[in-house]
Structure formats: structure tokens, C-alpha cells
Length: 508
Image (cartoon, rainbow, N blue to C red; front, side):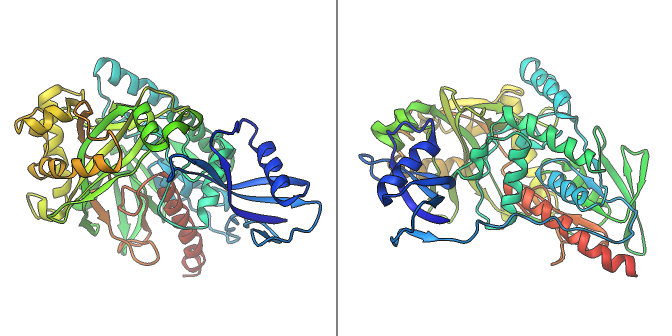
């Protein structure tokens, strides 16, 4: 088997049958007859707008030995993730709070290892959740327990389903393989910037739930963690919906970054937490054709909708940056509390919508908070969500860049901290030079976006455990991840730690 990197194919080639095209190109380049061609990685190189191309890393078999520095002989592909197996006699059941990526993958690995978890999710199953979300979008009727933030799959279910991540971890392969098995396109296994799309994610999360159940796990919806009991500094019981109790030795906290009442409950019970920086801003919207042409030039017509990632460092030390860019997507209302307005972005798998959108955010530091309270970041978010609601109800507050920059009392400026407006004014010309057309006056701005990440971190030690024994914070809401993939990986790590701890725990 051979592996070749930096294998380039012009972007204007018809790639409908990728494997056939790549096999032909390999045969031509190395004068061989290739077989078993496998794509390891696919990206687009658009640095030269006159020669935009696909770039591949490939593995393949050859009918003859290849003598080339560009093709390296390999004995095997990357090994698959090995499920940790617990062979002891523990009969308890860990409780996983939250069924977003972290909780979902934690529960999956526990179930695969033969330890039957109970998942409690405050929201509804995705089939019912979709009805609640659509009722909110169409009629303005918010269900505080079943919405864009809460329910099966977490906030990511109503997003672009982006799987890009800055972490490097062998468990990523496990995450991608499970998503593919559950219904995601197999291309996510090799794309440099993989995404699933909200429409496909709804099926994927349901299928993973069914797999967990088939392995002996249990998933309870409309079940919110409202308390827990301890003995000798260790978790022994959790309370659900203020009435049902579940005996357990392990409580995995994967609540998502919008579980503000859960944070309050933890604060009241003196669970160690710390304030954490996050970001705030708006969603910006352009014609997708403008973005694609700016990125790919004349090759835009041959390629999928382009994305972008921009950042500018302000003179005051803050950063202005784009986040969670959704090609061919739409801007949505994403509130989870009454009389507060939250904005987010979403794309379907085809990314074939007319518009591109992205968050445009500015750093918020704990020093910006208006008190020293551990949950001051939550109140900071709420302040601007309420201001936005006062301007437009649950609908995003909308303006254009031209209107925003000319009027200090613009409707959107009233819903943002002063340093955010100042940051936009300074940064926008620089961002426009990095991406042609980004700073056009007709760029649509909708706000506010406050849920970029959790405003708190639930502290844990090097073994992933809180100061309270048996309590394992994980995922984005706990302050340890930043997206679907990294949250899922953190959930897997949490499951591994629990499995490893069982040996010691059961010997005590």
C-alpha cells in the first residue's frame, strides 16, 4: 500500500466520481494501474485564484513497485479506536446529564464498554423538539425546555453541523466513524472542513440514541437535573425534575453552555467553578455568490460554497473574529429563556441557500463583568439578550453595516456593549481587505449572538473529576470544548476515566 500527499487535481475537473478520477490521475502520474484508492484527506487550495485546485492525501494499491519520493510505502492505515472494556462486577449505572455531543459520546462509550448509563436530557427527542422549534420560529411561542438550545443533540442539532476542530486527538476518528455509521456522509471522514448539516444531524443523533439503547443504555427526555445528594464527599443520588431520584456513583455533567439554571444549582451546592471569558456580537450575512467568488474567483462555479475565517487584533488587545461560518445557510432565532433574544446560524447539508452568514464576535473578559459573582458572565449575556428583546421581540435585531457605522445610536448598537461597536468600526476595513466585499455597506447584521461558549468552567482535576467525588464535568457547557467534535472527544475521555476509575472504586 502506498500513501501520497499534496496530490493536486484542478478544481474545474468533474469530480462526480472522485475515486475514478483520482485513480486515473494516479495511473498517469506514476505509470501504474492503481486499485483500492482511498481518500485520507481532501481540501481546496485557493491561494492562487488562477490555479485553484483540490489537494488530496491518498492511499492506494499498485500493480508494480513505485520509485518516487512522492509516494511512500505504508504497511497499514491508522488504527481504529479500541473500545475500553470493563470486566469487573460493577452493577451501578452512571448518570449522564445532557445529550449533546459530549453526553452522547460519553454514554455511547460507556454502553459499548458494558456499563449501562442512564442519560437525562431536559429537552425532548429530536422528533418532538423539531415541532417546538418550528412553533417558536413561526408563532413566537417559546418552550424554555425544548428549543434550539435544549433537546436531543444539543445546540448543534440546529446548526451547520461543523466538525472542524483545533484539537489533535486519535479519538476524532471514533467520532467521525460513529457519525458516518449513524447516517452522515462518508466524506466527513476525509474532508479538511467537514460538516453534516442540520437536516442530516436530526437523523444522526436519533440513530446514535438508538444504538446506546440497544447496548443497554437508557435515554430519558424531559428530564432535568435539579439536585443531587452526597455521602462522605461522594455522589450517591441525583434528583430529576425535583421529584424522581436515581441512585448512582457517577454523575457526568455535560449540560451545554445555555444551562444557566444548572449553573445556579451547582453554585448553590458549592461545586467549584470559575468565571470564563467568552465573546459577544452579531451575525453578518452576505450573498453566498459574493463569498465564493471572493475566495475562488472564476473557479467558484465548480466548487462547493466557500467559507471564510477572519480575525483582526484591535489596538486595545481585544480580538474581532468570525465564528461558526455557515455557507449557504440562514440566520435563526435561538432563545432559550423568555423575553430574551439570541441569534445563531444554521445550514442544511446541501448548503444551497442564497446567503452566507457568520458570527462576528468580540472578546468578553471577566474584567468586563459587572460583579465578582461566579455567574456574572451569565448575567452579562442576559443583559444584552434582554436589550435585544426590547428592540424586536424574539426576532433578531437587524440593520446593515452602512447604517450601523454611520449612526452611534443604531438599533443594534443599543443591544451591544460599547466596546463591541468600537471594535467593529476599527476592524471592518481590515477584514474587508482580507475578504473582498466583506465590508460592503449592504452587509446585513443581526443580533445578538451571546452563546459562543460557556461563561463558566466547572473545575475538574487531572483525572477529569470535580472536588466532589463521582462528579465529572465535560463538554462545552462545562468549559472544556468548543464545538461538536471537541465536545464529543471530551465526552469519550470522560467515559474512559470513569471506566478506569471503576477498578479502583470497586476495590475500595
